[in-house]
Image (tube, rainbow, N blue to C red; front, side, top):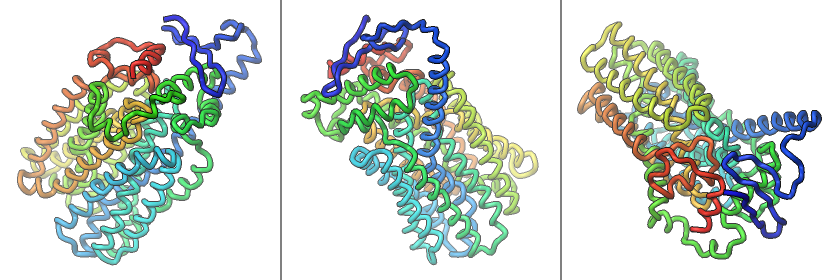
Length: 525
């Protein structure tokens, strides 16, 4: 493949050495790779440690919004028991109250893609937090079901913004070797939020009904203080800065997140090429939404993969399992409220603990093996829940098996499709389309979540809780085939390389993409 030179308008010449061994050095440098300088080595190690900590801090702070989503999902499963008792709402109103958050959040996700392209990834996260907190405060003080729905509407919009922008921001700021695990952080924080919601249910369940649910919902306002502080620490996404022609600012951010200066220049050159900065023909491109409505074959494959994996994450019933776990355990024979909420805490612990497994393995094993483990495991567990609730019935054995299989189901979800879904949709799209295409995927996710959450009780009345889980198990089995046929392995590749995987529909069956092919990609576009 040889050497590739790249001219950068207004910023001098960027020299790159791109080969199959993927070693980085400046072409104009006479320094050899084998510099045996102890102080230089020590300085490099110190810088590596510093950049790792900086990127980790950015990923953590960017993920704080996800705690809000998780907390709302977790806390509502218990709070709804007391809301029902206090406000005397019907079963249909209960379904609407729980499920509308997901449906409403799609509007936030739709707006979030365009918003983040205009004001930046960082300030879109700030907007998400402000809107959500306004909704949370409204719900806490709601005197009636109608006001509760208004608060839910605002919270849903805020969650929609936050749920699509955090993975994109982290993917754009992370080095390739750790991008998978860092982009999984929002899913960790969602699970942490769910667990905190369950714990809040358990902790405040002893209060009078008209106070307990308000305290449960009110506690969700607290993370806003940390989110406010985070905005003074995290930088803007370097890829967004390049899109806005702020190349020097992007270089400054990348020097903080990548410990090798030569690699910074190489990655920056790739981003400039992919973004088309300085190329007049790029400004004549079709509008983003027009391009997505009449996609090229490669973009069509990206959209099917991204939208499909987002939908499968939800139509396998994870939100129904989390939101309605008290009802599921009631069906298995647990009647006491405290025991019901304690069992849901066990679900939250399982979901949170196993996300850590995904974090450690996603950049070692890759995305696809984890998706196989996850979807196959969920299929078995969902089928087993159906068998338990349909044929074993109530009693100690039924209760033990229901708790075991529900906890196992959320564990398998957290090991694979939970985090990997967001990682993939933040990786696979080209830079110019990334925010809005990922927003479209998030819309699919939220719509499916809302439809499942809003219809779960009605469907269980029609075909029983066990029958509903048999349906989920069939959908989960289909998701295994989807992963096999349409999801490529993206481990260890730069965002610009991943774009090439979809150029050839057979490319992801095992062949590797070389870094220099990025040039070929841009020349073809």
